[in-house]
Image (cartoon, rainbow, N blue to C red):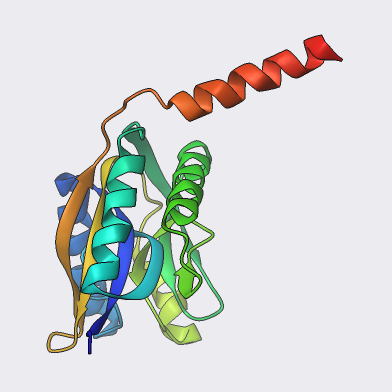
Length: 196
């Protein structure tokens, strides 16, 4: 019988931003007390899913292939936001949010799993499951953010039930190669008006 694990795929920002967000989380905890995601490393979730070890090898090979064609992005986290479930997060600037959405869609299509949670709105969580009072306090605690970041890799994380956190088990860098499939689609889209 094979063992199934819970995995998370995420965009991983540069180390400078990871450390900055860590300090923000610690400062917020001093202000409002412990909260969900306090100890989670800064990341932008793509998807979460279950897989056994054989299945994850196949998934990762597909992701490595797709990341060959991703180009690193340089963006900023320029506003705070929240969701009805009490999540408090840093929002990605609109241009790079669009790019991350495109990358995420390509990854999801590539791994082709039916039993998957997909994030449709790229964001970097600071806290989760805050009640309305603590959510309001979090908004009041921070000044308007202007945090530059670089994203040049995806991380695969596996849930560690002992720690109650995800552990990064593989980094997949973006290689900036030309995507021949995208080139062919672009050529075809330009050709169609000429045919008509």
